[in-house]
Length: 294
Image (cartoon, rainbow, N blue to C red; front, side, top):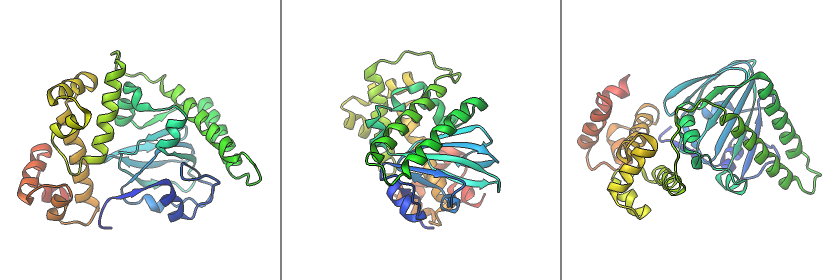
């Protein structure tokens, strides 16, 4: 492997040869079918939102280099900008995975980035245990989605699946809204829009751009205003967000890509390996070489 893999739903389906009745906007995976867990043995990004529900057995995933255990009745939510790897699943693992494009999310009028407290919580804590009855209810949703997706004779299969997926995701949001978020701040609409726009731009450009000014210009605000806004809304400055994305990318490439330190520096648009080394050590307390050898 010589880089971080980025997959669309269409590429994922083609790679695993998975026929689920979905299309480029939705993919439904059930573990009692020939699920190709090996595909996620190495870190990758999916250009989609992933909602996974474990119904039996156990597993472990790493999201943004943080391990999370997946036990029965656990729901895991993964965003497109995240780097995910499946470390292991038990032989008796059972579950459902619903993979949804951002296009379908917009059509369903569902955008978690508009709910900043939910989005921030899931970024830091993507896995949550559910009440068993709630988990069974979501499982019935998944079974129905899969059944309708595989009904090749249905004239309105796409419309039915899209509607059911939207209902499933809204039901998940119902449960996520019940989580004990430590955020009682009221965020005005314009702030929500700017936060969402910043995260989307950061996801696209963090490998090439580390300047707050670059993102502020794209968003038509001043760097000072954007930094203070991000600090107020999320508790972290714009520069801290940028550094987090860059360091996460650097750590993943150093650990798993097979690239040399110089190649990683080039991949992340650092002018020299020395500059990259100083930046990395400033934010992690160790050199790229030390981290790579861990």
